[in-house]
Length: 83
Image (cartoon, rainbow, N blue to C red; front, side, top):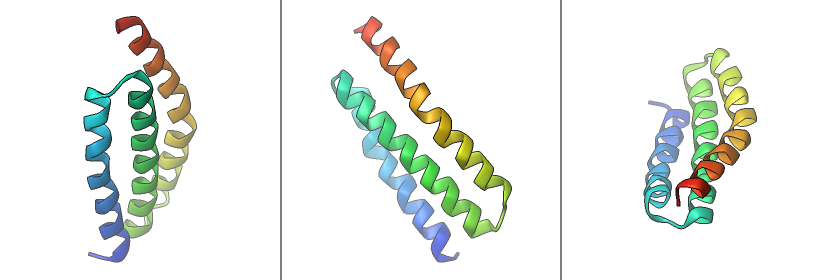
C-alpha cells in the first residue's frame, strides 16, 4: 500500500460525517455536506488514479467534478420540495 492509497482511504473516511449531516442537517447544511462529500470523492478518485497508475480514473474524476455542482442543485431543489 503506497501513500496515495492511504490518503484516498483517509478521504473516504472523512466522507462519513458528511453523510451523517446529509441525513440530519437543515437544507443548507445538507447541501454543503453534499458538495463537500463530492469534493472528497473527486479527490479520492484522483488519488486512486495515481496510486494504481490508471489514466482512465483521471477522466472519471474530471467528469465527476463537472457534474457535481449540477447534481447538487438538483438535490437542493428536491429537498426544498420535500421539506
